[in-house]
Length: 215
Image (cartoon, rainbow, N blue to C red):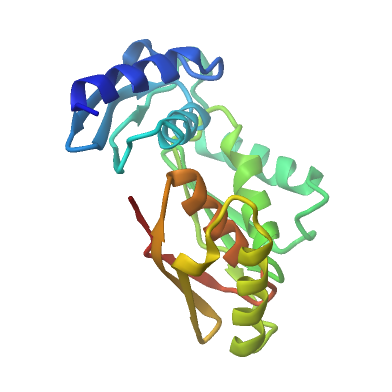
């Protein structure tokens, strides 16, 4: 597929996604690598645009350069954003009480603290993504290691075998200090994401280095 044909597919996908206002998003493609530019009104829209492009067949890589520019009527002070972030995290039953701290600087949210599972770390970030005024998130929440490397490797390999989305024989898993590295080749960004989620699903995983190639 030519870069121009891929660009048109991406433009159509962005236009079709109801959660995105694509009017101010620029798309450039070179050798299958997509650069997204322009601006949107929320961090959630920025992520939605990236995830939409990942699902387009033929995309080999993405450079995310979209800026978040909230409308003046929706701009909030940092202390307001922090208060709303703490509130929405407190309402999320999947995030343990008192385990996550929030700091905000010029709309950029930093999450810190320690939790037992990756899904708790992920849930805190997902909750904050929806808030007005947020222009970006740094997730510094740590996952406390609670399993041995051999157990983690076995559980991840079993999860990969169970996944109908994946050819697990093409993926190699290594674990050191509860940090997982994935190597190999997958057919699409969707498969790459499924493999990474499988790795994070194992208890005790504190980090995942996704080195899978799409091709």
